[in-house]
Amino acid sequence: MLHIYCPHCAEYREEEEFRPKGEAHIARPVAPEAASDEEWGTYLFFRKNPRGLHHELWYHAAGCRKFFNATRDTVSYQILETYKVGQKPSVVAGQSSNKGAAK
Amino acid sequence: MSDYAQMELNPRGAVKSESPLAMTRARVAQAASPQEARVLICEKAFLGHLVLRGNADDEAFRAGVERALGLALPLEMGPLSLDEARGISIQWMSPDEWLLIVPAGQEFAAEAALRGQLTGHYAVMNVSGGQTLLELSGPCVRELLMKCTPYDVHPRHFPVGKGVTSVFAKSSAVIRRVGEARWELVIRRSFADYLYSWILDAAEEFGVFVASGEAARSAARDAARELATEAR
Image 1 (cartoon, one colour):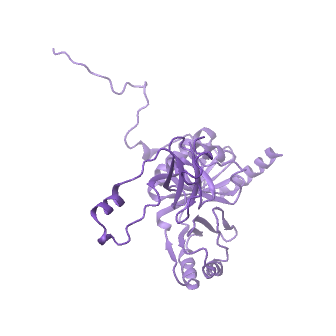
Image 2 (cartoon, chains in turn yellow, cyan):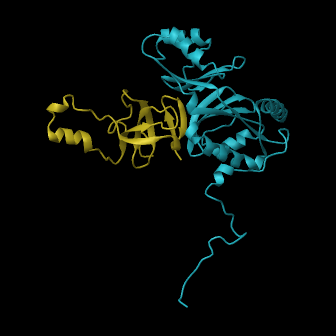
């Protein structure tokens, strides 16, 4: 089982308390009525599936019931950081890929 | 005579069989007295449970709650604001949500006091009918909890006065430690019968006694003394 750090509870908790909610940082088109079908379709349905660093949205379902973001390595399953929604990740693909991402 | 295969579905004695209504008659072997039990279960029914929501960064909101209840609003996960003498507690549930528990019959006054002191964007909701509180006491409660929740209940990680929400018996519960050997569970009404059966079943091996309030409190005092002696 993974221990995941919840940035709201400020504590490591069991994976069992959390639910993954897919890719993070998906921006909604500013003017949906003006968006083309392709833009809207991309926003709704198309998700990244990287091999390596991935920024994800997680939900602390059995704890504080808040959403937060996690940077996870999809190969090793290692969670490199968790941060609140609205914040920027400090670990970004390319810039620090050798730092421990593929431990 | 035709060829047929028949199976004895319920061979007498070989397999324990249960009626579909077995749960309503859940029976475990109870200890003969509270003194012999290592786990005491006591429901504190009809307490006033209120959910308070607001902005923790707002000085006026925090001050208003303190004026209304005489207790500080906890600003982080873990430590309960607890006034045992008045039977009032406030627990951090999430960054903008708190659980307030007051003695039976005081929920209406508590809500009115909060509404009298708070202004702006906040919410107070009386949820007393939706949940209940179980008090678990005795020297083996920690071992019982270890069977039920993935949360670390070791004293080093779960000191007296801490409260958390976590997974409990595949459902969820608010777990609070209010004394050395005294814990509280806040459970949802719809899960109450399931969780009660689960807890009884899990506690059977330690010796369990379902007690009235006073018996549970005196046994908790004995258990705390026992734990203190063990620690020495």
